[in-house]
Amino acid sequence: MADTFKPRHPEEARDAVLWAMAEDQPLEILGTGSRRALGRPVQAAHVLDLSGLSGIELYEPAELVMTALAGTPMAEIEAALADKNQELAFDPIDYGPLLGQPAGEGTVGGVVAANFAGSKRLKFGAARDHILGLEAVSGRGEIFKSGGRVVKNVTGYDLPRALTGSWGTLAVSTRITLKVQPRAETEATLVVSGLGDAAAVEAMCSAMGSSAEVSAAAHLPDPVAARLAAEGHALSGPATLLRLEGFGPSVDYRFALLEKRLGSTGRITRLDVDASRALWQAVRDVLPFAGTSGLVWRVSVAPAAGARFVEKLRETLAGEVYYDWSGGLVWLAVEGDDPRADEVRAAVTAAGGGHATLVRAPAPLRASVPVFHPQPAPLAALNARIKAQFDPKGILNPGRMGA
Image (cartoon, rainbow, N blue to C red; front, side):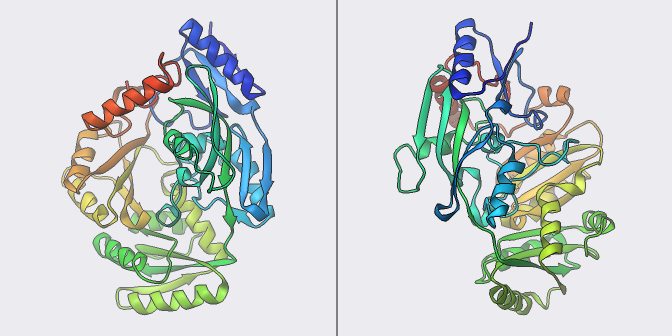
């Protein structure tokens, strides 16, 4: 009979892991369960539900630091930060709408476990770059702490970064300390209309390499731009988006700088703060593919290689795409029930290498196809040794990242 453990304190989470270790019973680690459809289906009959480990324990806006229990909803964290006009700079993606779930139901533990980041990753990094400290329970049933509340406290600082992105397969996070930052006073988005994919990637890379301090760059080919335009966003035809944030005069100056730099490439328009933020949320959360049928891939390549990857892919496979991270992140929607994994990953290799992750697919398909990009043998062996140290009996989220 399946059991669900719902700890209210880190010590209770430890006790659940100790029981699982003693009984050789694997555990599925969940927050709210809203992102259960990401990764491979976990092969475990018992659930460790961390939603009871919830609450912001420390928030010092003047020190730009926050500590929260792992089951704290991201909506609660973002509301507390917004009240002080602050934010998480890595702008974590919310996969809820893409996966057919409500928005805003993820937890901070899930964000850290998957190393989520949004469109501003190129400038600010991902979740692992903003973790100051972590408390967790290893697969040995041991509570450990690493890092602290300030960047200067470097003792064990790399351990939280190593656990971030492990999808709950190495340890059960119970308490997380993050650095936060002031929210920009205002923002604007420069839109270049009419560019093809290759020209758009060239324009984005040029802008990112300029002194304009672009915080995000994306390109929406015509079908995707048309879908967002139908939802009320001010777009017309293929749209290349460059996000500028900061104080008002600075944003205006940098907009003019980019306008002069890119004015000959296409028609330029400006989206001011409200329209800009709404559009970037849609780009970040993959809303162009939310509510559609079919499978969705998340492909990471070198920014300059994004259009080359798509060109190679379209030799054998039709599908809708759009670009984030200045061309380095390609969202690909494939119709039907065949993910065409070999063709997608062959195109990644032809573009110079990267990673292709199957993000949206039915559970049986995610169980039969490598969801995460296969690792080279030396890296896979290293990860296996790390897993053996943290979780020697393999009881934490077995099967989540690989068969």
